Image 1 (tube, rainbow, N blue to C red):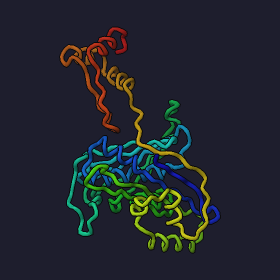
Image 2: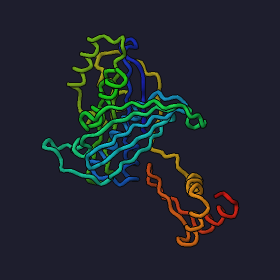
Image 3: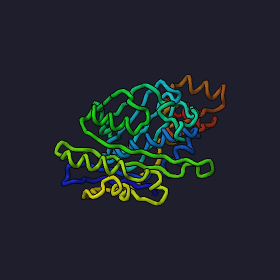
Length: 297
């Protein structure tokens, strides 16, 4: 099971989060059948959203969205407090050749665009509070840097963000995935920031460490070096959608009596695919008749 931890460091002047998200990214890639470069982009986006939402409270929801001019067109990830995350890309088969250094050209398939962070509270209780929405231009398209740029510009939190997804041609396609997020609070000492920067500069590659068995705490140690830290919370994380057959029925019912009747008479049923997880829901003639007979539409 994938894990995420969050805590504080340097006498509570630094906020830290780390996660191993291999199975989470594998499930997302399996569901959306993404190309290699899109798999790397979606995996980074899901991991970054989990890290940013590490301290979400019950009934909170965090959505991170990229709207881009590149071939991928857009990426959305949504996390809630129980450690579940879901997400999708608009163009799952976008692809570009590897860069000269052998890495995926994530920035190339994203291109220019906007980076959005949407924080909501009480949505499951039916509370319609105004969400917080932060927006910045995409600064690199590599996603980790875009999370850091958003935090610095929109929330005034200087941060270091590392996100990695390692792929291989054979199954399992996703070898490993994970990330680390370090946030400097206003009381942080500049010397601490310099120490962390230097430690990160000389640290092993993130995916190499995870492939060799590193845990989230190992990733924190690798990032913080000699700086003391305290873990405040740990949770299991996974890719999971809140869609269901009942929700599919509700959505189709909302189309109205005439539309449902048309589906019954012309199509002999109805199908609905969830955009977030690609799950297909099929309603047969009996399901549609029941809707009409019980005046659900």
